[in-house]
Structures are given as structure tokens and as C-alpha cells.
Figure 1 (cartoon, helix red, strand yellow):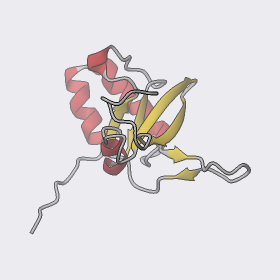
Figure 2 (figure 1 turned 120 degrees about the vertical axis):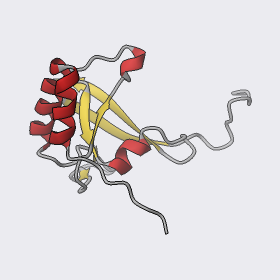
Figure 3 (figure 1 turned 30 degrees about the horizontal axis):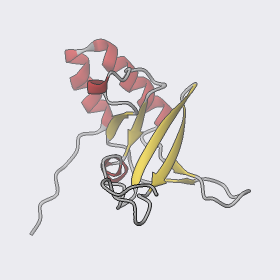
Amino acid sequence: MKRLRAYAPLRARSARAEALRPEIAAVYAAVDDRSAGQCETMLAPNVGGIAPLRCQRRAVDHHHVVKRSQGGPTDPDHVVALCRTCHERTDFPYSRGRLVIEALGAEQFRYEIRYAKKGRGPCESSD
């Protein structure tokens, strides 16, 4: 039987981060307040006039829109609270549908599931 790993609540994880880097903990706390503990993923359908679809799961991770290792800033305009499923989807291959999050500023984000174009692999020409 597969054993599920338990995840610490966001507040507890933020408390651990605070011991290491108080400025990061302050950003995570602001993101936690904004999300109210819920995953922030909102997917708008391609049909006009229909309300966006929001993920209904509990947030367990903080996701940097641009990874810190790639020079991404740690501020509320570039960090979102995600559930485990949505967070894993940010690293999916495009063939499976990757969740792409774009920071729009003022703590606003665009969420989109992107797929690879059929018949276009990395070694194929665009002709």
C-alpha cells in the first residue's frame, strides 16, 4: 500500500522559514493571509462571460513564479500558495499539460494550462 506523506500547514512551514530568514517568513505570511489557506490557482475557460474556475484544495506549498535559483524575487507579487497537485503541475512536461503562472503585478496572477503542440518535438523543424 502506498503511504501518503503528511504536509505541515502553511503557518507551521512559515514558522520554520522565519527561524532561517525572517524576510521570507514575512512574505509567506502575507501570501497565507491573501490565500486564506486555499490554493490560489484560478483557471479561466476560453468561453467569454463564464466565471473562472478556482481550485478547491487546501494550500500546502508556496510557489515562486520565477524560481529563486533563477533569480526570482521573494515578494507577494511573485509568490503564490498552491495545493500539492497544482504545485506539481508547474513542473509537468508540456505533453501532459503544464500549469504556467504569470505574475501581473499588484498580487495578481494569470494561470494557464499549456500543452505541447502536436507533431512538434524539440528536434523537428518548423517548416
